[in-house]
Image 1: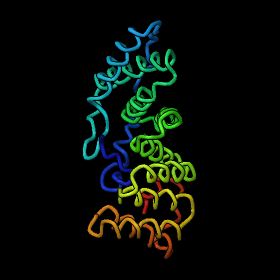
Image 2: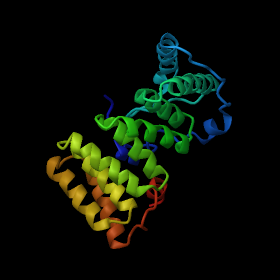
Image 3: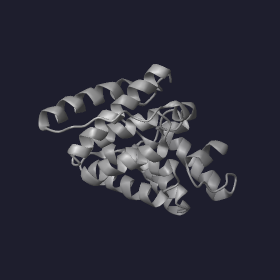
Length: 221
């Protein structure tokens, strides 16, 4: 699975590009209806294939074009039909969330990732993506909850403790944030991302950087 770390955006555009232009341009999805299991499987596969090539992964931002927007919008429409027929399909919600990231709609992405996380509690990438969009929207407490859950699944993942540090920082729990990033650096002393998070946490605690309320605030420092 992909390493969709919350902190990856500190070194490029957070969690992929923001794509405000895409958000303004993408049209309403065309209605699709699923009426049976065969349709469900076929339309899930079609929708996934439309979105997957454009997903924002680590070190990769899709170039936003009219064709990309049309493909992702059609893919989301397909997966909307899938989840209407089968509300338990957590993967369809997750892929829709990735699609809305490409379209530059963090609120819609957050809603889809939350639906996926509410169903699927055993996949740390689901928790990571939900937490990332929570931080975009300033929902620090929810980001902490999701990241702490991901840590229970993969406790040896040093990056998750750096993620947790940012979630705690945005929640205003600066001392706890320092403890979390220190834990990350104990596990991976040479990790440059964790080192950068530690610098941010130290700057906030010392007053060099204002208290962030969301991830966009971290761009201002």
